[in-house]
Image (cartoon, rainbow over the protein chains, first blue to last red):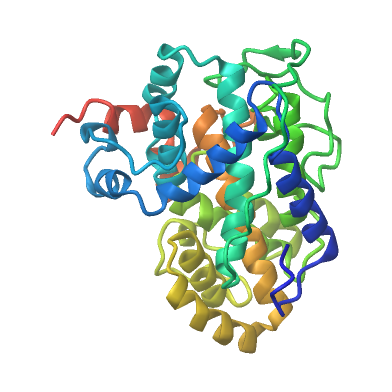
Length: 234
Length: 123
């Protein structure tokens, strides 16, 4: 991965992204490797989907019905979820989450999708930002979903139960007291999704002493600007 | 929110409204180039970004330019995790940023306000 760029990327970031890419192709606790790769395919399809484009132009994305330009056999409600997360994250509401649940998707299944899609968003965004072709998708590994033990979660005021906290410190670099912020607890229903996502994210940021050629204030400005552009409250 | 926290050790003042207002100078080094790189990357303006990369790299150094895109791409993912899970602010952040969220317009991004604005629009 990234072998065709002359831009200086740190080895740790490349290794992390390669590890994540391989992991996405493996069966997760609730989805097969084939389904996880299909999630990435749909995330990419959302960037050129005509329905998503119409929704972005609308006063509300929930006022526009239609069929997505989907490229996989994933269930329509999952395709819709992935396309919304990829193409218009700032206007996701509880309504979307409730519609997914009403279709019989469990919160655990939902969280695994969130983890896979957004890990791939990080990797795809960096490729595109550096002027590179998107990484070739890995071959899905066979076998059924692995399942998982019941996660240790609590009601933390999110749409899904979140990790109790301080069980998996170190997801974000630079925390002085191993305190887990809510964002690191948000996918606690599926610990492997936490691991997958933060393996991809960790080389991109630290809360202090950032190990990049940027001052902390510069990194915070970029982070805050992205949050504003994506209309992210957190 | 994070920008104010990091400004304290620097003993510098940053204009937090620069986060939501693209015309305000944030006061950080190479703020213009950081903004240009970030906005082009997050808004998928790939053709513009090719030129911006060259110009920003010449101004601030290639490694810094690349690292700016590294931070932006990471946050393009993590903001979606927050948006898709409805995760609330951490308690201390919630308490410390009430005024700032109002003055910068960030409060408009909270989940209840989004539901009010988007869920019941039918035309």
